[in-house]
Image (cartoon, rainbow, N blue to C red; front, top):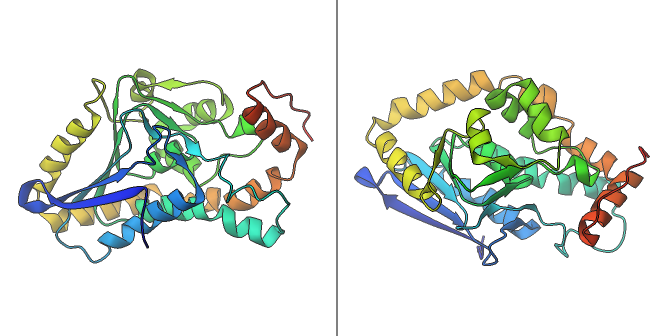
Length: 269
């Protein structure tokens, strides 16, 4: 696949065992359009048969890891209702993207600066570690848009933060989660000065890269299998719930309010 928004660099760090994936749409927003999601979903294939790389760092720009799903993407908004089958198919792109990153053999680290919102946060929690600048913030706006939080992210957030904080983060959709709160809630592993998230992630990646690669991969696999063993029970209906909420009046109100930059008024219909 030809990629316009994602660049992969391999052969860095000790013995060339670190790789960097840079996601940059060139607008300091880094919203997840359909094309951007396809490119990011395709990246793990670069590492399927890569026995040399031990660690992969995913980073955005200085102002945004990702602002989440691109509600202005013309490919996502075609001006007419889609058949249910096509809706279900489209809604599986995000979950497949996150699952592809979670299932990578390599240890993965998100280096977050600025916005990490919605689908961006869903992608970040699919990785093994998250480092962020102290000016970064997280937000899960899906409910305020009239939809459910999907992409398999609720079980992942639950594993990181526990039930109460996961509910708070998802249900109180307007609330920004500051870097300090994200650290306290265990959503991230380390907070550093602004502009230093990538450097901190690289230093951590280099430490991992110096370890023997085979037991590192085995350890990641064992921990992930135990942690996420029951995820499918919670997340298998994500896409269908997203399609269902997308048929509600509240969804139309939420997305219209977003585009019109006003507060939504939900009716429960």
